[in-house]
Image 1 (cartoon, rainbow, N blue to C red):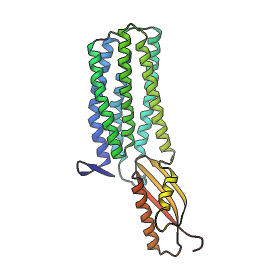
Image 2 (tube, rainbow, N blue to C red):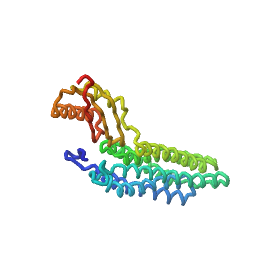
Image 3 (tube, rainbow, N blue to C red):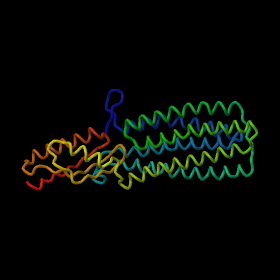
Image 4 (tube, one colour):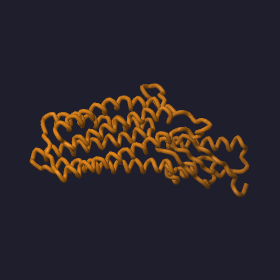
Length: 296
């Protein structure tokens, strides 16, 4: 599978890896900065945010490994292709997020029971301002490229990076609370970050579960409407769809005039396929089963 990039056709796998390499170094830099400054200042919320960002870098590494196989063409062992490798990686990402959330909740509860107010200085504010700007850019960049490439993994990672924006704002709020003498603000912010990460993980896991259990990625009524409007189709008796947001597979039973020759029926099937792909570009394969009308 290829897509347009810079006026040329770019393989999807290469495009995804290009995005992941670019964002890997940014994620690693901001996470290490937040962990270091947060540790020095005693800010649990900032350290939690740093680990949250560090996971972004880990996700990039996972994605780089997985997409080396996910976009390989179909073979005898995987006749439908390898795109579910990417779905499996997204599910792994969700599980990692849940584990991180649990760890952060433990730390936050300890901080709430025994408050230790952090020492917030200009360096804390500067690091958070820079990382906020980077996170906004990375989230927008990954989401745009994910839509263009039809990549579940990039879309999942973009959602995770968007969460960094809200988390960073929450950490800034904890800084203000600490400066105001609210000793519980840091622990509360860390707990809120953990909850946010857990919600994000649940959304990613639900999305991956839908793909792995073959939930229809396109409403069947919409597919049926397109097929019914194709010249030569008398009725539509069965529609099935499975796959992910960027790789949908469709099977349809189309009723045609039984007097059509094989060549004519094949031409109708081609029109059905063309119409479906135009209406839903995420479709990568269409199987049309022609059946004769009852009066043929």
